[in-house]
Amino acid sequence: MSTKECTHHKERKKKRTRQCCAGLLIFLFLVLLTILIIWAVLQPKKPTFLLQDATIFNFNVSAPNILSATIQITVTSRNPNDKIGIYYDRLGTFATFRGQQITYSTAIPPVYQGHKDRNVWSPFVYGNDVPIAPFFGPMLSAAQADGGVWLIFRLDGRIRWKVGTLVTSRYHIHVTCPAYIPFGDTPRPGGIVVGNAVKYQLVSSCDVSL
Image 1 (cartoon, helix red, strand yellow):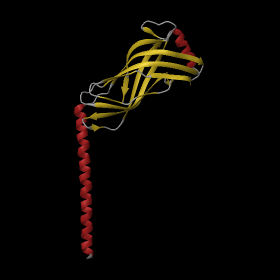
Image 2 (tube, rainbow, N blue to C red):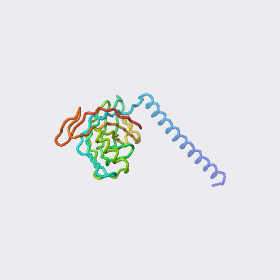
Image 3 (cartoon, helix red, strand yellow):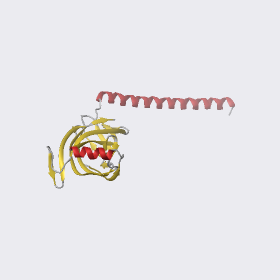
Image 4 (cartoon, rainbow, N blue to C red):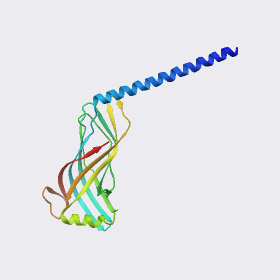
């Protein structure tokens, strides 16, 4: 075989390789373009969350920087989309006071939320002898003595969107639910005695960011 024939063969091979790469790039571009068009037409909306109630079992500041708390909350999540489902792959909830986490994170089991579906979760958020900032202890004790304290219950995790058979990659979801928690030996207005605990109806809207 002559040198000229070998060179011609290599050129044809390079040309086929370039054509294959170009075809693959065009195919990927068309797929991504289709996904973007579908996404724009469907206009996905964020799920909505509502903090319905909180049951106080324990909330005790035993030292300036030590807190023990056990609170059961009821949170409702709704998917407002009529053509898009939501996979909650991972979701954890905990309580914070002035930006500091004061309970452990409680995991909520993974679940799929269909079109217009609603889910209700009632996790316990708790922490035994949790160290907090030293100046938070007196603040919490004073707020408790005054009748109540503002807490923020957070839900953080990852979700995926489902459109037909298409499932997207994971997105971070951050939910913030502010709540005023009353305290006292006897139930305050809106409180219901439940065994050795007091349940308060809150019905507080939550902020959702993705």
